[in-house]
Image 1: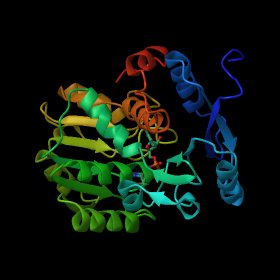
Image 2 (image 1 turned 90 degrees about the horizontal axis):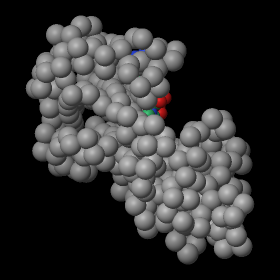
Image 3 (image 1 turned 45 degrees about the horizontal axis):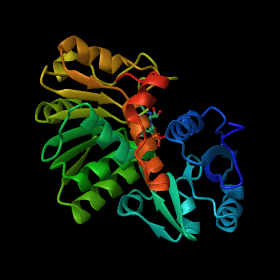
Length: 290
Ligand code: NAD
């Protein structure tokens, strides 16, 4: 690192709280080093109370960009100049790009999900998807899938505080894209089974399967899956959730959340540097298998 940092090195930030546990600094700095790019990526503990000042600081210091995580993803748009179509529809930003003082907010989680599918040889364009989730990650996936050309999305969620967000997502998709979206209550398991049966791909985009819900799934039994179904869980810790284990037993092709994590970072990396992240190298050094 000492040899790498010069008077010309450009800063890329990550603003969130808490954030010290993040693997993003390692991922991006390894990629900069591999490609010989003169950037450094650092995490900063920033919450909503210091967000506006931080963005002003980014402008003043001509910082090239930043990642944004909780609790700032749904708030930071107020301080930016422009939003990508996906960020606008999601109401969330996870990447900021500073082009000569113009700050644009993007959301790369959904791009990461779609790119990971492509990388795994899975083509969902023109097909039907069933997905569970209405939080930040789920919304980004649903919007990006609709923008990219998935033909139909059946969205399930429990009737909690995220339900209204799911209603808004369905409205946005139906009004602003060519995809048909429908919202269902996850408590209606017969409907969930029916929708999965007519889908090409099924995705869990909730925290079900990771701590404190590790070892659990809302899928009652293996009759919900068939061998031709693609089953994705965006949880990556553990790498194999109870739901993925069940899908593997049936013989489904499966994918965990590590690919999405890698490719959401790769999308941001390319926006800042104009260079593709060295994906195969990153998979090797971060020990990513999905
Ligand atoms: P969030 O808090 O915004 O959303 C939580 C979602 O989980 C909501 O839809 C909520 O209704 C649902 N939920 C909560 N308890 C539930 C239960 N008991 N049964 C069924 N559904 C329940 O969270 P998020 O940021 O969208 O993250 C969701 C998951 O996705 C987390 O496990 C996170 O680690 C993972 N994630 C993965 C990636 C990746 O790159 N692979 C990126 C972001 C998030």
